Image (cartoon, rainbow, N blue to C red; front, side, top):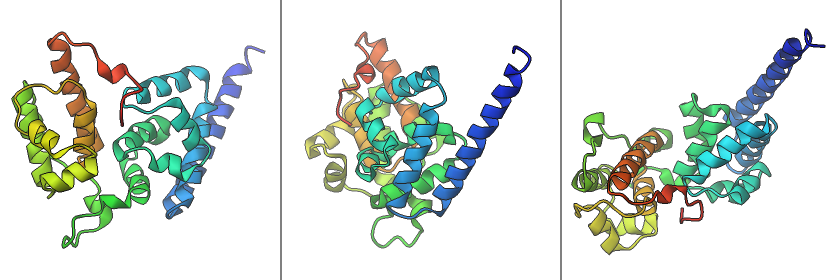
Amino acid sequence: MGARRPGNGRAQLSSLGRAILEVTSAIRRSTGESVAAEVGLLVRIERSGGSTGWECLLKHVARFGIKATQIEQVAGGDASGLRGLTYFQGFELLTKCSLGNDLQLIAHILALVHPELAAPAGNSRSLRKCAFVELPDAALRVENGADLAQILYLSMKTSELNPTALSRRAGIGRSQVYNLTSSPSVPRTPHQVQAFLTACRLHPVQIRRLLDRWEGLNLRDGRPDPLLDAAGPR
């Protein structure tokens, strides 16, 4: 019995690998609504891999405001459930579903789910090239609240949005936009920062990096960690 277990494990891994390959191939051919069914299958494959890995996934995405009920919607192939995630949240979920190293495929999925990420009017570049705005690494150094405010302002300008348009996209007030881009104080919660950067179409890897820096500044100031509150707004 013991001699056969390694072989069985390899066979199971090979089977999962083939299933994932089939799904990702189908996703590459997907357009519009059909991608939700393929992503749902991918999430179900991840869920079948074992309780420990699945619990780690749920714990990770909960930090970014994604609820278990939303994951179940996505797993069921519900297109509205997938669209209900911001592209940053979708990125965090997909990187935990065996797609972590395939950023091109993730960008393809998110571009289908969120066509509003198209470039501003008058910009002729393709959707996929414009799906993510990226800032130079040197511009992402955050030592205090003033640095973070400067990065938020730069993100807004780089994405070619004005405060009114950004306010509408992010679902936050114009006064909050002005405050986030000018106040030297560290924002008390990450949700507005996440919404702001998502509206700017900043690359999810850079959003995650900035939220990590926000968390460091927040904990340095002796505040609790609201990122652990999965009930917070998206």
